Image (cartoon, rainbow, N blue to C red; front, side, top):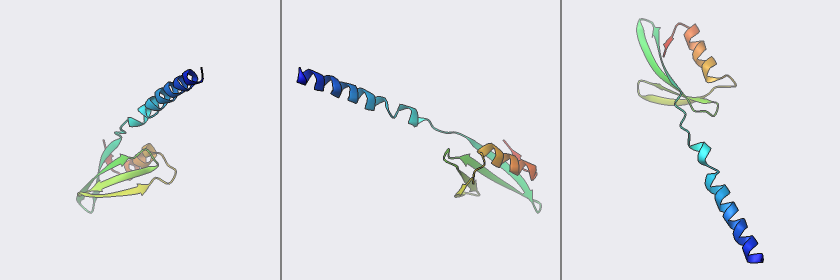
Amino acid sequence: MKRIKIAILAIGVLGFTACGNDDNDEIIDSCETCSLMIMDQEVVSEYCDNGDGTVTITTAGVEQTEDLEGVTFDQFIAAFELLGASCN
């Protein structure tokens, strides 16, 4: 009887851990490309939400990660649009 309980427990634990990571495989594809005119030069940057309170900024092939400091990604992009940037 003890072996049956251990076998059932082992199957239950195996089944539980096999499904535990399924929801974490989602890829966050939240990127915006923004262009801004600075001194008659168009600067185009890509902003990607990392989903962890940071954003990856790529400008002219150079990539850097910045902390959003408590604002949402949408608020971050809206701030650039208020400065005159065009984002899509």
